[in-house]
Amino acid sequence: MSSQPAHAADPEPRFGFDNTYARELPGTFVAWQPAKVPSPRLLFLNEELAMELGLDPAGLRGDRGAAIFAGNLVPVDAEPIAQAYAGHQFGGFSPQLGDGRALLLGELVDRAGLRRDVAFKGSGRTPFSRGGDGKAAVGPMLREVLIGEGMHALGIPTTRALAVAATGEPVHREQVLPGAVLTRVAASHLRVGTFQFFASRGDIDTLRQLADYAIARHDPELAGVPDRYRALLHAVGQRQARLIAQWTNVGFIHGVMNTDNMTLSGETIDYGPC
Image (cartoon, rainbow, N blue to C red; front, side, top):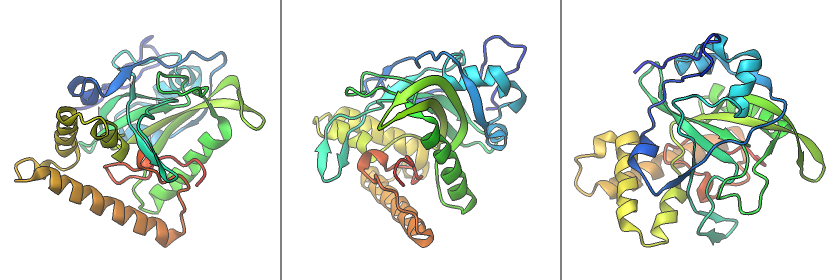
């Protein structure tokens, strides 16, 4: 499927999303909208990645791009959702985490025929925010750009930044910082913690649906294999082992390598305190 580019003359951007996660896995997310921001400004646009995704960079620049990537102008074919997941964090299990400041906008099939998630980070509070403000600061979001693109150039599987937009809002951390929204691209945002969320609740039906979805998306060759769920576990373990070996080879330290930050696709995700 070829994506439809966002054109400057079109008042409603359309990316060509085909949102299988939202369509096939009800009960694993909450539908939500990004918060509006007062003064969006485009700080970074990855034009090479945009073209890979079948998008027209010309329609994503300037004020229009700033409005899109800050969350003020949501593509009409997007279905923003906050995904549910759990996580083992720093030695303890948190049975409910979820996207507290992120939203999956939708999925694109890129020019190579690969399905890719497009998601916001820092787009405001969600039902999973747990008291957080749902925001992100300019510095850490630009760091995701730099390190993610560096990892990509080194051939290490990674999520990538499509854009960063300043919001014009302050973010209160140890000090007041300028706010920003990152647009992140991934093979998927399925995490180990996605499975833990439902496993810890004994929800075997949803767990099976998730596993079948993961196989169809990441390991379709396993679909007809006897004991396919065990085979999926092995495939994910192999991908993650290769990823960590590649991290070690370049001296990369993740910093928050918890199960909510370990993808089934074997991509590096979340460059917080790396």
